[in-house]
Amino acid sequence: MLIIVTLTWGLSFPLIKILLHDISPFMLVTVRFSITLVFFVIIFGRSFPINNFNVWKKGLILGIFLFLGYAFQTLGLYYTTASKSAFITGINLIFIPFIQYFVLRLKPGMFNAIGAVIVLIGLFLFTGTHLGEPNIGDIFTIFCAISFAVHIVLLSKYSENTGFLPLAFGQFLAMAFLGILSTLILEETFFGQIKFDIRPLAIIYLLVLSLISTLYALILMTKYQSSTTPFRAGIIYNTEAVFAAVFAYFLLGEILSGVQITAALIIIAGLMFAEIAGLIKAKYNNEVA
Image (cartoon, rainbow, N blue to C red; front, side):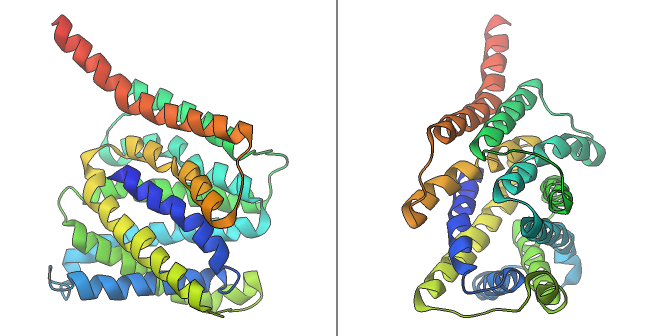
């Protein structure tokens, strides 16, 4: 299920790139999560006591960190390159074990750690990153990575005793509200103007982004991440770069280089190692015993 989540996130990258021709960044976040919130209430509004703040307040906390991740990533992209942004965002794998231990008192397994290193190497090669001199955009993106790491860990913690629908609702509500505030306060400062020029095809892309890459994806993420550890989930989520490249090929005509294809295979190998090596060891130990 989490791989399906990551696949839908990969789809969002070329869609966002297309939509940014017509909609300014923070306005896009606002519209995306407002559409998501409206459809969520229509579909699931009667499935839990939506008027009881205590039921979904933890979702608001998750939504704040999720928004900070998107906001810092957007601000970072204004000052740094897309490849550096993608790689620095991926280093949330470095922060997750520390936050996971602090919040859940849970240490990552050795095979997960090795798999994460393999994924990071693949991500470095895949993005073609040349780190160079750090800039303010890189600092923003580091805060983005930390925010996403906190979100992943807290999602695992909160989903243990809170239903996935209230958690999802709180996140969508926080994202829509904070998106509106950021549009009004930050959009003109960082991006020059609030822009919303919509075309018929863009409406289709916006609905796909809102309903599949956001509503469907976040519901699956909220429901199923509790079945694994935050660190393993982080490894899975970092394969989104591979899916993004595949969709970019079909929607934007972007071609992968030989190095990127090799790097994509390395990322997949890191994921497979993290997922399978521990199972093989456990099976071996059982057979020996």
